[in-house]
Image (cartoon, rainbow, N blue to C red; front, side, top):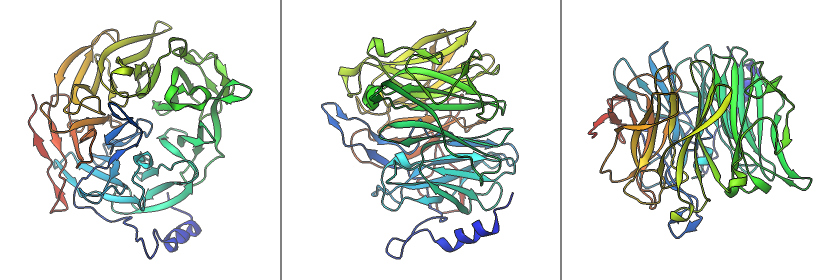
Length: 466
């Protein structure tokens, strides 16, 4: 597909920075350097969350996609120019499965002074092979952006398509076209979606959920989403009572198989959007009555199209023992009912891993093991396996050990292929540090992406594992 001439012309003359702050857009960075961040909300056990957040947040989806056409895994992340800087660069890289090498990554969008990985990117590949990068914004103060690669399957150069309000982008390609879940800040966090036949022409933003507590108090939401068989889009989301994100609770699920025209529950009950009632047929779990917080991590469909959700539930938002236990849970559908199993416990609400569902086994790859910085984001990575479709779990492999820094935000590529089955970042959980990026496979092999690159393509470094 080609861009309209007028749009292309306006993009080419617009420029990407100012005379005083030249942008790094469409430049290569000689190495993979993740962003380090702290929120600045301090407690006895440390910041509410801080550390290696290059693959943050769980609500940016997807971050990586394998393309069988070119046998490459393309991936986006929040980077930085150097080890001493906290300057967010929205980056894209590629791993070549034929050569076993990575290319020097490219800056898709320079955030020009922003250091907040809430503005990290998400990725989509369309049917013609063009790479689309959706750059998150933050409320109306920092806009979001859509970019498209100039050439199919190429990370060399990107064209800006739009500037708009969107946070937590979750773009998917379906048989109908582009489907995009995102969030707007309207005093609270509200869920929206839009669709497009070509990525250029989009529908009006449609409000998906705006649950109210009463006539005077609205709730906010965080969500996860995925697509099954190129047709059904589904989303799990929680609720923020009175708009307070630190009280996030409950779990809801809705889906659509007709490009967002009609939404239903898992069993096909029609729903009217936006959802507004706290108690409605889409609610899967009532955690508010148990005073439990819900931190969403990942969702996936099994091979039969049944959705499952990975999340942590805890007693509160404050880091440290006060909010423990931090229970890793999987909610899934079986015999017409929702079931929830507890996998293990870790030590932070913002520990984050990914869920893998196959015909024979389910896996979770996550920082569930104690790390070098207690009560901080991340830890040591492990693989947990279920051989009975989520009912029971056991730890089958430890991926990292004796690490200097914590490993965090493990992400699942779409159509993942060995050896790039998951990727993540590492860094000190409490103090500013360098942040490296890694990937690995289910055999226990781990590679670190080169922090400094002298050549256009280089092999990642194999890391010793247990």
